[in-house]
Picture 1 (cartoon, helix red, strand yellow):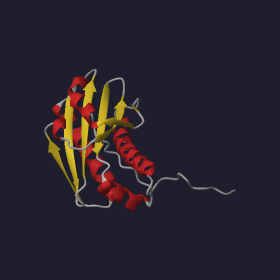
Picture 2 (tube, rainbow, N blue to C red):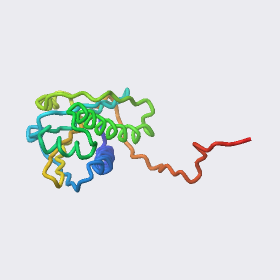
Picture 3 (spheres, one colour):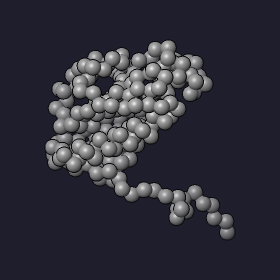
Picture 4 (cartoon, rainbow, N blue to C red):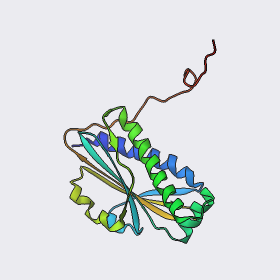
Length: 182
């Protein structure tokens, strides 16, 4: 069971991660909520699961590998091979979910994350079968006309209270990486 406060926290974590990672595309973008996965028009999806013994979070990233998407990724990576484009999308979603996991580690230290799995978009039609305590879908529109979607589904096994990390790391007082000579 998720409290209303936890739902707000998880939406904030998701929103921050979307804004941080979409900057990699070097485009202006707009993110908005959509009501249902059926409204998603993209053809492929990447699924990553973040879980602990108290919850399971399924994170979906939907995309269509059309010419515009391929051109954008080629421009970003200087690669034209389709396999490299898939690697880029995998790594994009992997680092996105890794950021969310980093936020959750402060509250849930025993949290793991799966590897990215490409699945047909139609699998999202069964997302409600996951017995979600929280389900949200997003539409992401880039200024070059490319659209992506994302979904987050959380199933809990007990009372869960998500909290955003309020500790901000600074390098000012850190001695990490400093070599000491004798």
